[in-house]
Length: 259
Image (cartoon, rainbow, N blue to C red):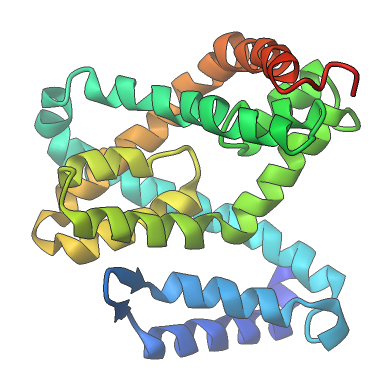
């Protein structure tokens, strides 16, 4: 109930929303900047401790509201799935296959770069997944969050929370403008298992293809749901062991065995 009495937090949140909605959608060539991105930037600035605009208590209560907001977002997206089940079933194995990229890409591209830059076992936690809440739980259970793997996954979780939505929104817009992938493929790629990242990415796709909004949101929501449910088992039984094994391979490849 404390959150309901925090009028300062509610007023600041309202002002940020109003300002960002007034700014609206800004198109810079191939890049589409959504109000959500401006909200994250403004929120990041006003939460700087030195400015003393928000206290630690305000921010803790704001994180509680964020969880509830994401539940409402997921519920809304879930309602988009039903009317578009035929489109989703027609995708057949595509929805499952796209899940491979969520972990395989991070291991193949991220892990060797991390090892080459001198990271230790932190590289395993940082690159075995997209580092969202379920991935943190897996690492915490197997290694503990005080371990190198725990520090790796937490560092990526923080980066994803702060910059993930901004990055994926810009990246999606750039790829969408190239017109090399079908909008449904982009939508499935947006469902990485993160509500905020999916919302930012889907918003960019819908801006490019407004006539396909309903189907795009349905594909994104389905892929996101699949990533959240099936992804846990893939990360636990395949991705994490593979990343741990490949870590040793890359250490030897880059001559860092003695490090």
